[in-house]
Length: 332
Image (cartoon, rainbow, N blue to C red; front, side, top):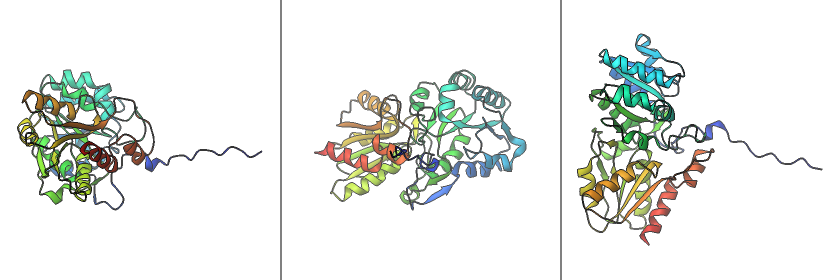
């Protein structure tokens, strides 16, 4: 009797947080390198992590400025409490961990120690949304929903390496607490082709189109640009409005662009359909009395599967191919 065939095992490389397509231009460690360059001019900047410096690119800072780096161990609540103390002493802490650990384990410390006192702490967290295949323990699909309700907390969701580099500098200059979704490792570079410059609190229209307006943040802006190019072949004009700052939201630009008549408005985000950019935009439009045809491309309100990232992105509708198919179906 033949032995039963074993199921093929996923390789680790298929499950880690790599969002770059094969052959795509990338930049290595844009956050880590930008922070090192910035810290060379800013002696007030310190780096802090919860045993994840290597996996958040903060190890580059630790190597360059060992006397200004603090390894707090696997204790995220202690990490946030200590960061608050550093800020009270006049330092500007850049704190890194995984987004799930900041949003779930350390929420109360961020809320009470950092945000309530408006302390100058910059929290940069890797593995946002569905950028890892390791399952719900590591997939931060609800982090924006958790943090949007915290008064005074700025929320940033960069698209690519350029966005990440520029946002790092901008949040360092901003006075007050910031939560930034961190793209680490080899990060795609796309926005340099669109004469783009990050401005905190500002949305940017990257391309125009008559039939569809995609309002997006994070890696979904990259997907939106690819989708727009694909649909151009169908003679469908797709505008892409990149919203790197989720809070405070650039309501003026969003309302202006969504008010242009006849366009389908699609909000695309690497986050749960609950409580993220989609609902923020929908609330903004309703309060302004603007009511376009409206759709969302987002992750489902569910605990997601583990697996290879390309497979998961297709399964949950946030790949470029899935996005193209969804918009085509809505235009019929």
